Image (cartoon, rainbow, N blue to C red; front, side):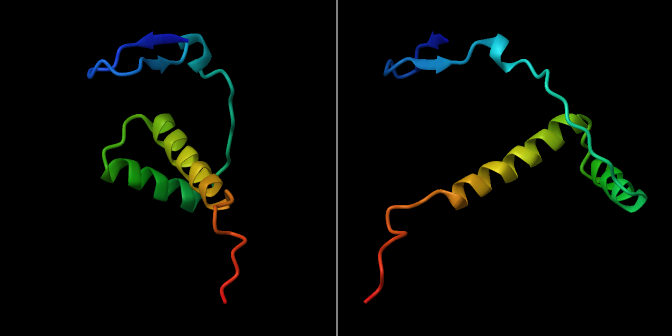
Length: 81
C-alpha cells in the first residue's frame, strides 16, 4: 500500500494499491419488463450516465447498511430492569 501525507501533517493515509482495486469480478441480474422500464426511467429522470457505477454503489450501500445493522453493539446483552 502506498502512503500519502495528510494535509494537516498527521499520520499518513494508507492508499490501497491500484492493482487491488481493478474490478474483474462480474455479476449478472435479470429484470422483468416493468422493472427495466422503471430503471430506465430513473436513469433518464436523474440523468445517470454511468449505470454500472450507480448499480454498484446502490448494492454496496445496502450491503454495508445491513452489515452495520447486524453487527453486535456494546449494549445488545443488557436487560432492562
